[in-house]
Structures are given as structure tokens and as C-alpha cells.
Length: 225
Image (cartoon, rainbow, N blue to C red; front, side, top):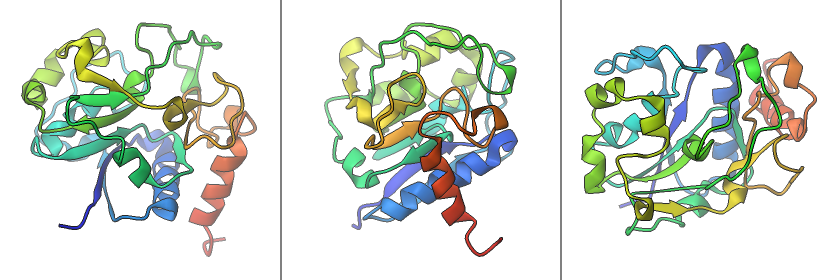
């Protein structure tokens, strides 16, 4: 069987260009086929969003990743406000069958009280761990993650991975979820995460490492100008 990267990407119509720019960056660097699932609310027929405390449209539905993959194999979830600068196969090669999922285990407090579109940027345990997840979809503990279950849970429960034990959560290198502005400039980061605001927004157009996003967007739009 040909290896294929299954990638669920957060989609919010308010920054749709971010999704397309991110997927462009993955395609450009990937050495294996990729299968993208845009996590758009209008396509999730079995999931009804009941949460009102969300800063984007996929803040809770991201936990549907094992369900969307029929609880089989491995899949990646990533926020749409990212740029990939490495072969996505390198991330898949970090799979550990002994773990339910793997994440970058950030340990930081945000420098900013506000982020894109005026959303409050709070500090909380395991902040940004769930923004990039390498899922072992077949892990038995994920069977609980059905659409109805996720719709009924709090952000605290889901984003802290409360259905898992700490030993179930593997660790990825920080370079695979490098937080622009929050962390020092690192142009060699494998995946840049514009967590405070994608450079598509005017307020973040010229922030740290924004040039990498703009260069990718230009290649995406090549031929349309």
C-alpha cells in the first residue's frame, strides 16, 4: 500500500486563505501523497456545534479526527494558521504506536492578552498542545470521541486530553509547532504557527516570520494576478 498522509486542517471562512496557503506549503514539500480534510462546519453532518466560547470554527471539532478516519491508522490535525517548511513525511516518521497521540508540549505564558479578530488570549494548562496533533486513530481510548460526546464536553476537558493518561501522550520536537511572536524567530522551524494572527490579517501582516507566509501565498496565487 502506498503511504499517504491523512491531514485534517482547521478551516474558518473568516481566514479561508490561511487554509489554502497552509495546504500549499505542505504539497510543495511533501515526498508522499497527501489527503486533506478541511474541517469546515458545514461539512460535518453528524456534528452539531453547541459551544459558544470558541475563537474559531474548529476549536472543538478538531477532536473528531479519529472519527473522521474511521478510528483507523494515523492522521495529523493542524490549525489552518500555519506554514510547513519541511517534508510532512518527517512528521509521520515520528509515529509511536505506544502512544495515543503526539504533540509539542509547549510550556509558556502568552505575551499578548488579545489575538486575531479581537479574541481574548488566555493562559491555560497545555495551551496550544492541541493545535498540532499526530493521532494514533486506532488507539482504543479514542473510541469515546464521537460527535455527540465532543459536542457535550468542555474545552477544558478536550484541550487537556482528559480522556487519556499522561503516559498516553507522546512528545514532538518544538520545531514542529513553532509559535511565531511567542517564540524567538526561527526561520528553520519545520512548521511555523501564527497562533496570535495569520499574516492575512492587517494587524499581523508584518510580524515575526510573516515573510514565509507571504512568499507561500504568492506561489499559491501565481497566475491569478
